[in-house]
Image 1 (cartoon, rainbow, N blue to C red):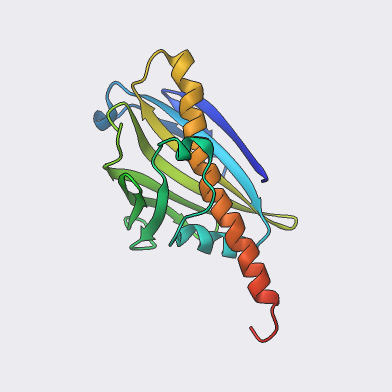
Image 2: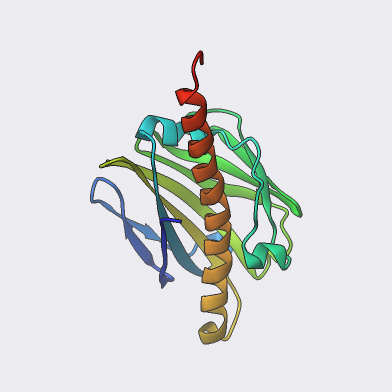
Length: 197
């Protein structure tokens, strides 16, 4: 799979936006005492950015082979419902062990969508929680590069022990979602090339 990932700094995390602006993530009242970190992964999908956008916006059913940590007990995403496709809209992602409610904070079709977590019933959320997530789409030769950033908040110490495990857990969830996107692209390509369709 064409997947790259990385863990960016923590606390006052900076990351570039598609327009070259920098966004600062700082402690907020709801996450007092938590260190914030951003995990980034990317994949190249063999479809136009419009189609990649549609696939990410409507994740009706996530399934298929699970990375090791998802098989070992981390929450597995099942589906995401986008209830309104505009800033301020609601998105709910359902997992096998709970749900994450999100508010749409950016809706720049077809280049970027972003969500802020407003509710979370996943286990372990007092020690490690999702803060926000975004997807960036860029047309490249032969398809679309999709970059996903997930901001997490953590109270787990010592950091030298937990940081690699947190990164592994989040990138495992990213890889699972990306594998579904890639499979949906392949299924769509077969369907589009069949006669009479």
